[in-house]
Structure formats: C-alpha cells, structure tokens
Image 1 (cartoon, rainbow, N blue to C red):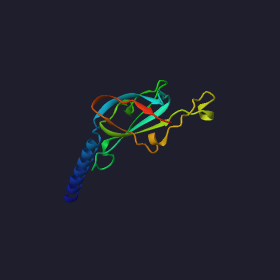
Image 2: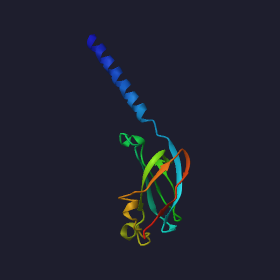
Image 3: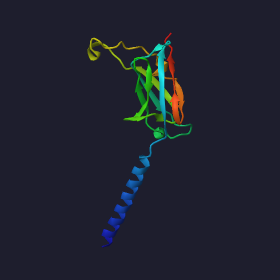
Image 4: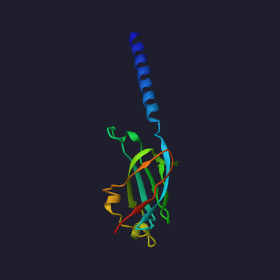
Length: 147
C-alpha cells in the first residue's frame, strides 16, 4: 500500500513538472511586423533570402530569445518576414541579418532559372548587418553594396 502511494505521488510530481515545463516553453516571444525593400547597388534585389537572427542581450544565456525569421524578396526587392509558419514578424530586439541569393540557374533552376547574385560575405556568412525590431510595424530597407 505504501509503495502504491509513493508511486502515485511520484506520478503526480512528474506530471506537474511536465505540464509546467510544457506551458513555459509554449510562451512565444513578443513580435513586431517587419517589411522592407532590399536593393543591390541601388537596384531592386529580387529572389534574395533574408534571415533575421535574434541576438541575446549582453549577459543573456543564448538561444532563449526566440526563433529566427525569414523572407524571400519579390521582383521589386520587397519582403515581409515570417516568424513560424504563417505567423508574420520577428522577435522584438536586436537581430543579425543575413542575405543570400535564393535563385539559381542550370539544371535545378531550369533553362529559365534566375541568375544567382553574388552577395558579399559582410551581408551573409560574415554578416556585420544588425538592426533592431520594435513592437508594432517596422520598415527596414537594406542597400547591399557590391562595389
């Protein structure tokens, strides 16, 4: 009888801990909507992949600030960030921004595949581009310099 009572107590504790842990992780960070236009040397930057990576505040503990947001620019270079699935926006706070060419030609892109644009490393693999996202609507235009 005492063993069964301990088992029940252990199960209640385990389920409580699990429920608390799940509810805590389900809390989404605050988001702001982000739209803008990307240009390359003053011309519309079409078919570019934009990634906003939230950065922990100084003294932060890493990836606790939320997931990144992405978008692909249209023919005019315009974009609107998506956070997760159909949710629009980006986590409020500081972001490292990476931009890569989303288009490609050749066999994967077919005969009509768009030409892939060479983006300088300072905008992607070695990005130094940082912007802040605030509550509400944010318009963040980016001009890539290749020359």
